[in-house]
Image (cartoon, rainbow, N blue to C red; front, side, top):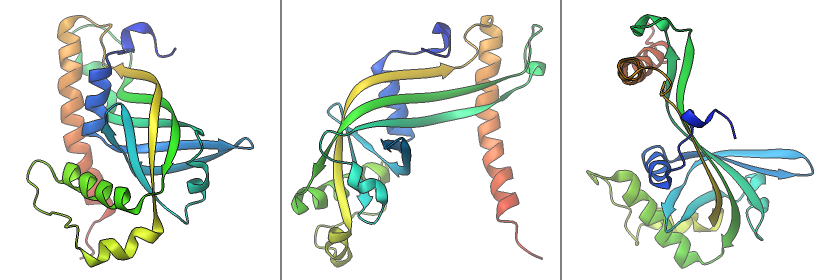
Length: 199
């Protein structure tokens, strides 16, 4: 298992926290040595992941019959400059990742799909719940024929929490502070650049 032991976290509760905080997953299936990859939110429920996929996505056909999948969740990440440390170090990159493997079951019930979409919306709207997906929403009913629901039974867990744990405590703390700062700043800088208004 890589990275080294000090950068691994086998605490399932920590990994579940990553999944719940950063639910956009990278879902990977393989058929005839060809990878199929989709990015979509997955909700953790009772040691399973629940998701929905467009019927026209070619990966949909692989999400059934106990087919095996790999799932990646990504937490915060950033470059760590040696300048933040009180000791001499080399540049590195800190990150939080959760790698899972599991077996898929397709759920064909329209009633289960509808309730699952409502439940997922409720989860994603937390804690303010400014929008509620109502069961009698006509757009919801109209789109049920174009969405497939699936569950993934998790069979393998792997947490990769590379957070400068191998450094002295003050440097580990500095890396944590930098991770927070860099993520808050980089999002704004990136979005300002990509969506810069033409004057």
